[in-house]
Length: 410
Image (cartoon, rainbow, N blue to C red):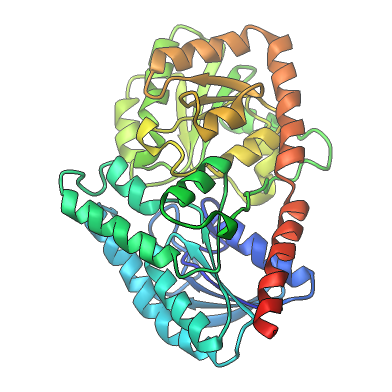
């Protein structure tokens, strides 16, 4: 197949959507397909242009994939309105290269959401190339924007209009995929026919195949010593609800054997650091290099995965896959019947969203019960293998793509 992928985020962005779009493109290329990607310049999660890149159009060959990057607006402090401009600028910038790519008549056009605004561009390409359109939804950005307050929910007409546009965009696709069963159900509730819905999960990016990594360098570099570590690593933005981690650290300030570590970047980090002032049991660090990911994640006694209640089932945090693969239990702030709650069950502890005391209690339960902690960690590793095998996920997606292109050939 000749596959054209259109998505705002791409490697070398270390977290979020980018690593998965790159992994899918590279995996399909390894299978012998011709893969071309139209992406934005890397900026996430710092919300600033990555070092070594210029905010201009360029084309490179990366891991067997032709990647064309286009310039776009990058807000330093991404409010709701600025995010809209951010996505709109990418859609406008990618239009020309996308129309040029249509002349190559790709067999399949795959659009990644976010950014939903760029999906109509992909639909135009698919129509011009007489190719099927596949939309992959990593994040229900419209719902999340209103649920987390990035866009005002009091503007009822605006919200209704935004959802109507979203439904119209999704109806253009021959196939719509997303990353969890609950998100598949949400697609159906938005009017996508069930036969056009496909679950394509994210996968673990950390390599634990070399045995048990030794995190002692981190313990030495960061002065952690032999303390237990409650670790969060990833984007630091509004929908994570990371304030609950500060509350838990404050509640456990007298436990000298427990350290909280938050690694990441994003628009809410400065605010969190301000809230944590005066606490000597919590550290903030930048995202760690991909080549040290296994060593870094093995630093944790427990992983922390907070999520606001309002964001439940609008996104399944991609960081969960690496947490489970590390063989450490996960403490999530997830309500029953949500997708995150189901994924963590038996591999860790679920606590009520926003409840710092409950999170602190879960940390102490696992720290003080090594047998339970080890059993849950082993279950987490098994679940990562069974549900998040990169090879199996990409092979299954490829099998789903092939019939679409065969229909087009007929």
